[in-house]
Amino acid sequence: DVKVTQSSRYLVKRTGEKVFLECVQDMDHENMFWYRQDPGLGLRLIYFSYDVKMKEKGDIPEGYSVSREKKERFSLILESASTNQTSMYLCASSLGLAGGLETQYFGPGTRLLVL
Amino acid sequence: SQQGEEDPQALSIQEGENATMNCSYKTSINNLQWYRQNSGRGLVHLILIRSNEREKHSGRLRVTLDTSKKSSSLLITASRAADTASYFCATVGRGGSNYKLTFGKGTLLTVNP
Image (cartoon, rainbow over all chains, first blue to last red):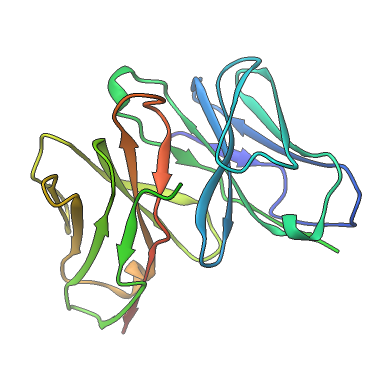
């Protein structure tokens, strides 16, 4: 079974802190994704990566950056956390199949509270 | 931008009843997928239906797709309390990034024992 793990289930940070959210997948997947999930807004894509060191902005990249130095690891960075970044963060990965027949495998999520 | 929109936003039924959730989308798709999320957890993939398919089954799940109406439905038969979760449809658009999913806002299903 594919396993996607996230470094923390719950995280509390202060405004202005630099925050790192780590995600690791163990199935040699090409693609990795970071979403945030907020009540009434559903899942929104922040960034995704289709290869090591390659990244592409999603729908809401402002205030975030990402890093993918190794295939199995995808990090989301909040350079200076703000209260409006309080949210549930979900990492996902997918195989990288041609033809668009992609299913994504999700981690358990990190619930971030910025005070 | 959001592609799929689920309907209803919330659904409450008794154990043993069937649950039907609908999803509408706006542009041409490559495929449509349904995911499930238990409270406070990550999403789990349930089923994928391709744009040239009309119906697909997996256990107690039945998915239909009507590309002319740009809509899909998910039917869960003989529901159980353990089916209580949020259900999301997600689409992969034609062209562009064909590995990028666009999710709807979800239907919260509550199955009462």
